[in-house]
Amino acid sequence: MFATVVDRVVGEVRALSPAGAPRAALVDGVAALSRLRGALDAAEARFAAAIDSLGDSGLDAAGVLRSVTHCSGRQAAKRSTRGEYLANMPRLAESLSSGRIPGETVDALIRAAGEISPGAVDSDTKLLATCEARPADLASREIRDWIRSHQSVEDAEAQLESQRKARRASWFTNSAGMMVCNIEFDPVTGAAVVAGFDSETESLWRSDGGRDGKPNDVRTPTQRRCDAIARLLGVASPHQADSNLPDPAGGGGSTNVVVVADLSVITGADPNGRCEILDTGPVPPSVLSQLPSNTTWLGALFDGPGRPLWLGRARRLANDGQRLMAAVRDRGCVNCGAPRHRCQVHHRVEWSRGGSTDIDDLALLCQRCHTLLHEGHIRLHRRPDGSWVTVPVVGDQSGGSTARDGPITVEEAA
Image (cartoon, rainbow, N blue to C red; front, side):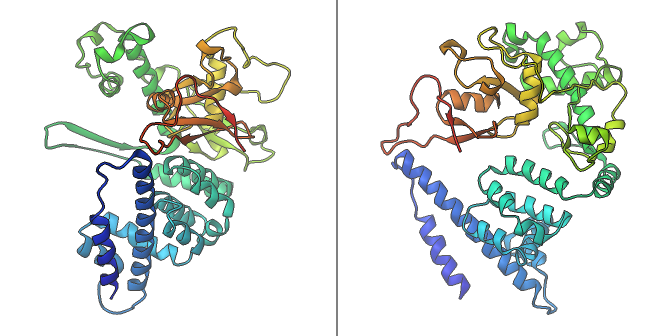
C-alpha cells in the first residue's frame, strides 16, 4: 500500500520538464524538490525506525537499506541512525519533513544529540531556528559551538584526547595512477599543520607573481598546494622554478595559529567561555598551553580607547589588524564558510565608489562568493550584532536577474 502512493509521486516527478521555464519558476521548482527530498528523508527515517522496532529475526534497518537501495554500508548505518534519533526528536523530524532543514544539517544535529542528548538538541528552538536559516556548511559551525557550550571542561578534554587517539594516515594509488593521501589530525595539531602549510602555499603564490602578476597562469591553486606539501616534506617540487627558492622553514618557522579566547578563559575565571582556533572550532582551554613554542600569538582588543580598525579613506586595502578582526568576527567566508586563508576582504561599498576601509564595512568572502556578489547573484546584509548574512537574488518572471548594475547596497537587516 505504501509503494502505490510513492510510485504515484515518483511518476509525477519524473514527468516534470524544466525546458523553457523562466528562472523564477525554475528556482521555485528547486525549492519544491528540496521540500520533497526532506519529506522523503523523514519518511525513510520513520520506516527505518519501524523496521528496527519489529523485534523479529529479519534484517535490521541498516541491512534493509543496504540491500534495497544498494547504498554503502556506511550510508546505510547513517540513515538507520537518523531513524533511531528522529523517533525521539519530533521538532527536528518536523523540520526535516517540511524541508526547512536539509538532511546534511540533520545528521550534524544528530551527532550533537549523541554528544549531549537528543532532548537537549530538540528542545533548543533557537538552535533549530539558526540551522533552518543557514546553509549546512555554516550551520555545522553553529552546531560545533553549541556542543562546546554544553560540554564541561572535562568532557571537552576527553573529546580532544579521543580525537588524538583517532589520528590516522593512509595512501593508495587510484585508477589514474595518482598517489592519494588521506590524513586525519586532531583539531589542535591540524590547525598548526594547516597554518604552516598555508604559509608555504602563500610563499609559492608570491613566487608565482602574487598580486603583481597572474599566479594562476603559472600553476593552479590546487597544484600550488600540492607543491607546498612536497616542499615541506623535503621532497623536490615538480615545478622547475621552485628549485631556485630557499628551503621552506618546515617545523622551525613561525606558525600563525589564531586563537580566540575570552579574557575570563585566559585568567581562569570562566573556563567555559569562548576558546577556539579559527577555521578549526572550539577547543578546551588547556590547548592555550599546548600549542608549539614557535606559535605566533595575535592579540585582539575588543574594547578600549584606540580605533585603529576605522581607516576611512586613508587607505584602500585592509591592514593586518582589520584582516584579523574580520576573521575573528566572520570566521571565514560569510556566504559559504570557506576558511579564512581562502578569503578576500570585501568593501560593502566599493572603494572606487566612495567606500570606506572601516571594519564595520568589511566582510570576508572567498573568491567564488566575492564574484557571485559583484555579479549580483547574492546580496550582503548586516545583522544588528554586526555579523553578516547573505541572501540569494532570485530572477524575475522574465528570466532576468533582479540585481542592478553597480555596487551592492548593504542594508541594515534585523
